[in-house]
Image (tube, rainbow, N blue to C red; front, side):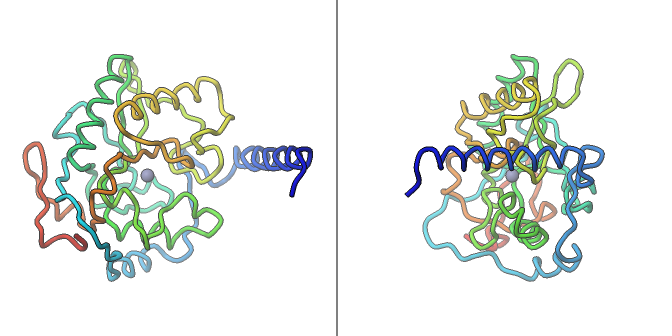
Length: 265
Ligand SMILES: [Zn+2]
């Protein structure tokens, strides 16, 4: 049992600790050039080889047939900044050999609507990541120390990115072309990335709210630990996939994945 006074003290203690932690990281060597860096637990190439040899979890149940759509083909105004196709990401080395972004068709259509609404306000979406093959999720998990694992998905249950129903994104100003500032940088593994983080500037929090308003209106839910991550409401309907971008065909307007390429149905 705790008294209200004790509870209040605990809340204050935790809040102060969180702010101190965030404040300490403001000038942290973990962030340079707008990129958060992590020292992987093991060499990335070792993690990659092991992840490619591994198999996604077997899921029982009925799933919709995957229908991944390449986002720029359904809306050419969608801007891409696929950090995992470059070394500008938290592991400092490319995960993808192609800078592409895919979502299951209903999620892609919802994103297009959100983008169109943002256009009316003078903004556009910029995509950092969307569908992600399962083995990359495993690499992220194995590379990340335990105290930061709240920012990565457990490969034992898979990520909603693996189902083609999660997206990492921000917004940019249509007039200047510049990405808007947010309370943290993308993929930053600190409390500043929390969806409800009360710090940062009022302008940064307003930018975060603008993105959230547009996404929530179209069936996306924000991940509480990351302002940039949104899950589409139908995610349970789709299986975990482990198809690399190179193995996804390039159809006009949409992509149908060859059934034999599914690691898991
Ligand atoms: Zn994400």
